[in-house]
Length: 116
Image (cartoon, rainbow, N blue to C red; front, side):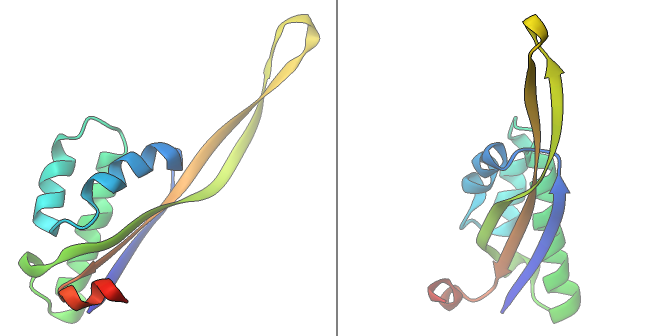
């Protein structure tokens, strides 16, 4: 059975977040949480919270064993952008984009779900 959890509007750009999500894609939940604990990137903390939330959803809502779960899919999607203006020399201005992202985690206990 597939169970998901979503974290919205995380203040880290999706390009930087994908470095973290690609490191744990396809791993067991316990292994992924152990790896995320020691990753130096700032995105490791919110990703570990979402993975733990998906595992808790599977355990509490569907009575699945959390030791049997693995990450079927994990995606970092683009969210909104805060647009700002920074002054530059000679009266010019430069646009600053502050990017945000959504992280979606799908965990499963059945290896046959990978083909779906």
